[in-house]
Length: 305
Image (cartoon, helix red, strand yellow):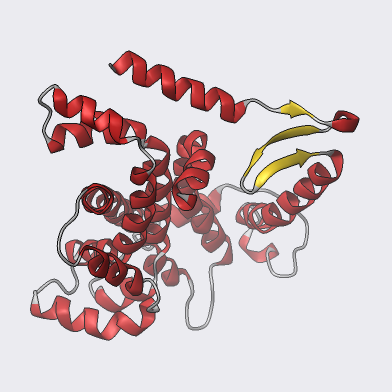
């Protein structure tokens, strides 16, 4: 059975990757809205847009190697007198390393808890019928329409009653609740596209619901799980308003809150600040690179089912 399922998946992936040669030598491939032509004009536009997107990152990287006194007014992408002391100062001063690992703990915990509970809820919404099913699902969707800043005061009062203010665990639970609605919505659409015949075959062999989810649904849903993991990680890693509101003790600060320590009332350590900003972007880039092979297919399949 597993071999048959693998053959079906392989056939579908091969069909999705297979392109057709169109007129004038253009390449036609299945796209988000039908047949997409990859011609030289689109390639040129793509390169220009990529350069525009990368320029701020390259400029930040350049300034992170500039001596602190030569940053103001510098417009060169290549530092004239590069130095690595900014990175040493950024990591060793202001407890930056401690903030980094606080953010890493919160982001990873948020991804694990959010994806686990969202997958279970999405499977229930996709496969089962129960009272008020549609009402509960659309109540989750309604939460997406509420700006997060409007919820800060109610969330603060709730965490205060739970004695979770100034706690990384409380902040993690806050991030989980914020990311659950979209994750459930996305995974539900993906799970609905998985043929029921696969599940029925598993259940004929005596598999229970948890085994169906862990041995069938999860392996088939790796692209969708990769997409929501990237979104959830980035949301938890970069979040600032809730973190600066809920955390009071410097030893509990996350990275976005800790970066503010580089900005003083009278002077700003621009070199270490840019170096710290570069270090802060590395985990998100690594996560995206690791999940890039599933990202495109996951967005295309999960969001449109």
